[in-house]
Image (cartoon, rainbow, N blue to C red; front, side, top):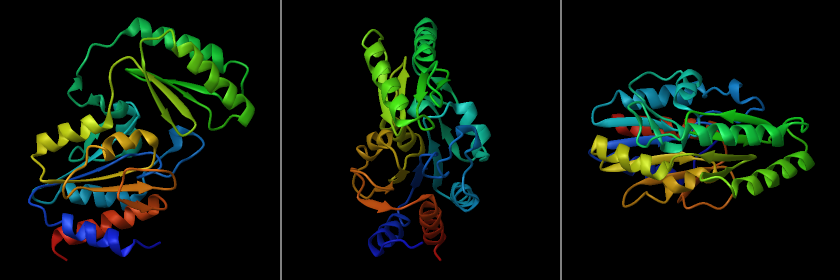
Length: 249
């Protein structure tokens, strides 16, 4: 694996900022995509680098994921020094910023379970503030039919729709990874931010980057990010490069 010269220069430059915030998505970025979401684990090199960055002076690191916060905590195995933000930026360790409509959450869960029934590989994941319909392990026909049925059903829900890779997620509170980046930036008084992400949900974070910030898209697809790498292994290499530069080495 190799990082482009442009990305190496950008990481070396941002490493010199007075107060640095390094943020990353989890699935497909810090952790390779797997068929069973419960099997996802971060690459050890990436996790070690993100943890080491958090231990440096005037430096903070964070994971911002669509996973529920407690699930993200269990799967990532990262220490408390690394900020964890779940539910696409809505769920911080301090809780949610809005009341959760539990009745609507249950209604969406029930209707999505009905849609998934009889379609092998289509699964429903209920989180504290949202419900996700996964079709990654379904046949193309069943997956397309399930997604279409969910979009139709959603017309009757007062829920925020987020589309990802082989997944639709319906949140009963407003969620935005970009807002999470802004909150962390303010909390840490960061003078520059680095964000790694692979999915369409990460574009909201890329859209909030500015000035000397560095956005890195993982994999193919249109993106607002200025830089790109191929796979999670490259994210680990980028974090190592950033860590070495931040240490002054």
